[in-house]
Length: 165
Image (cartoon, rainbow, N blue to C red; front, top):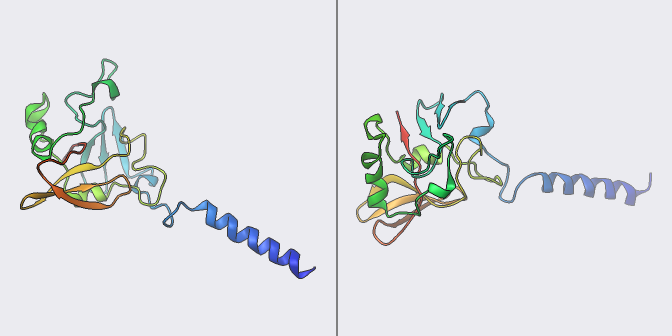
């Protein structure tokens, strides 16, 4: 077989491998393990961590009449202070909902993938999300690519999803 045909096949194999993975490396999606999560209505339980996640952002406003996340009812992004307070103000406050820590939220983010979360788990556009992790006047957000970013608590906005044990 001529050398240029072997080289072409090798080049095609390398190209196929390179295009099969998203930019930045392999897709590392904790949601890929189908047995890890138990979905019940607007919540899902992570069997690995024992956490229960609410599937809609700004939980107290985003449940439509059909019992599903309703984007038309979703609050705009909020300050960290309001994001921390919202679970206590909503109708489900007694159930112990809170913002996740940076560690908890980072453990749910799909890294190197075309999506931030598995769509059947959390119905959320790719946006920066608040965490309860803070340091002085700053708090941690997880951005749409899964990176942790430290931002001022005041004058910075983000979206919220909530978790409980």
